Length: 337
Image 1 (spheres, one colour):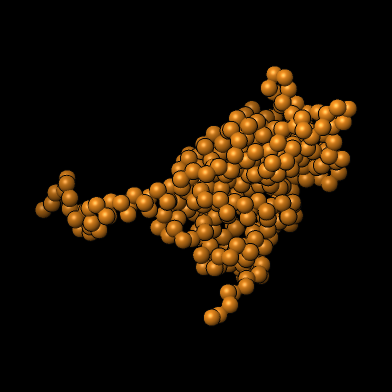
Image 2: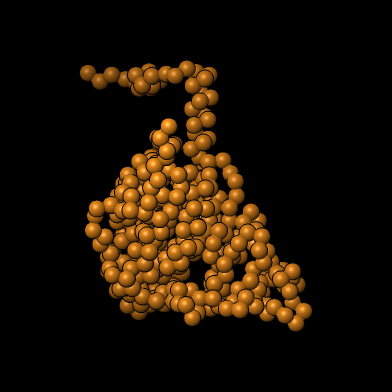
């Protein structure tokens, strides 16, 4: 018996020239995917990467797998069709904050509520990069861009909170340059049955450089990041000396450890906890709160593709296999002469 083929990062790198701006955070995410995919035990021909429109959507060209570069915002629809038609495939959606949350907003929320077994990597740089620097659905209020010269007056989407509102079963965050953390999040997403939604903070060094400096800069990030680990207390800070607990009014508050306050007084992260807890985490962000990264929520629920496969089997058992001609000429049909 032949031993299984051992794949490497090189096996997932295509022969196409990678055409992103030098220093773009997309390079780090691409590298992470090329390292993770060989470790998943999936044959290369069983991977499919689907993208829409945007800088991130060039991703399929750079991965030596099957791929579809689809139209603006419609990657979730194409990916759903691929998964339903070929349930054995590992389907990954690569999208951006503009592609998925603007023209594709309706598509992404219905993908999440249906819980199709695909993995979503949303590259969030808070700007439209491909079209040269207009504000996006995640740009902060007051953002000055080519399309908002006096500052944006739109309230931005919070992608993780939006996913939770659509009842997503897996919601996680990571950062482009946290290679070890990002790879682990990708593996966790792959292992989840249902839609896995990953918001990846990604720096656009040309049109929105420094948007996530507080969580990317080595001198700042330890005080501004909350690393989530299931079952562990919510502790953060350069010296791991701060934490989050519930106050007497059942509201979260930041406390200093010591002086009678111990880790036993803090909230412990529960990926399966109530959605209100997950929503609380999703809404935290600097400068008032640390930014939670890792798996925010992970619950089990029937996947759409499993339910559809079961339904087809049940109907086939009760009514027979059927044929296309009978379906086309049944009920309200007529012949035009």
